[in-house]
Amino acid sequence: MRPARNVAAPPANARLTKEQVVDLADAVARARGYDLTEYQRPKLQYDPADQIWLLSYDQNRAVRKHFIVAVGDRSKRTTILEGKK
Image 1: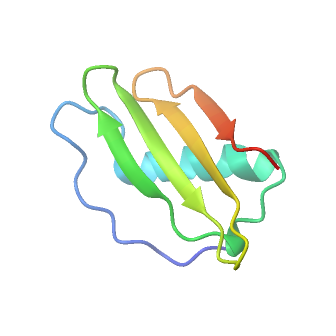
Image 2 (image 1 turned 90 degrees about the vertical axis):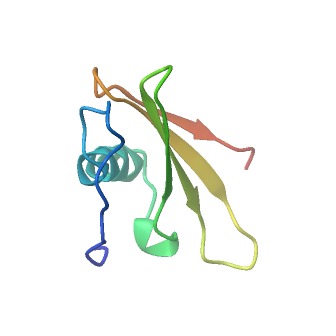
Image 3 (image 1 turned 180 degrees about the horizontal axis):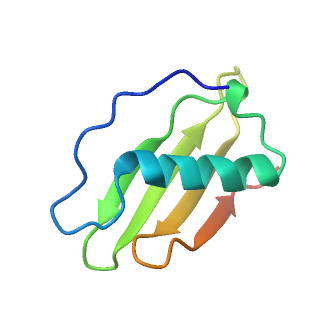
């Protein structure tokens, strides 16, 4: 389990809170088999034009793996964008 995180207020026009977005992204990443204890807390970006959140996960190892989870602010639809392995 990951440590509690400080979550600031979401952008003004976003429906989801940052905490909700991280919870959705973490759940889809775990379901895909990622061990999130091996990754830094995700970096969040919100695109108000497309109403989508992007969460960037970087691995804690010397040879880092990286993946991004996109979360639709209105639909809550999640997509994982994986780099080459």
